[in-house]
Length: 176
Image 1 (tube, rainbow, N blue to C red):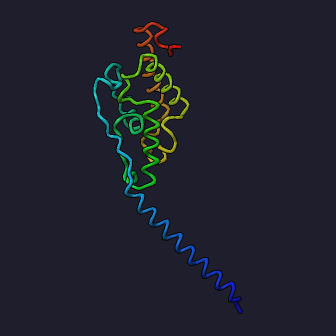
Image 2 (image 1 turned 45 degrees about the vertical axis):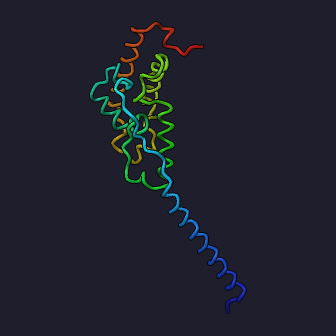
């Protein structure tokens, strides 16, 4: 025979769990109406990296597929970006990515920062730190092969050499 106190306690627990589940469902539905702004900023040709630096077509394609969703003013949003809290997480990645490097506003950077960004791009790609694994997990086409990494690194090295030929060495370092 079952203990009546245990049965009563189990019923209470079930009732509390139903209330908690209802609250979670209501909260999930409610947050769907709060959305971050989409990353669809203005593209001004004079501000983009391509305004000054030669970007070979193959490298540009790699940047478009593997970098621009987080590092430009034009993100191509997947279907799941319409579901909260995923949209907030994506927005956080995009804001952080653009804060670190924005190809759409690259020419707004001082020369020393452009040079530094080229150096960082080369290192991040070489080390496999970019694109980040959480992005490539869902965007398999963004995974860079060894040959593609070399293409990007060569482009970076050539761009840095162009800068070194054009600017005095002290202008390529951050001012103190």
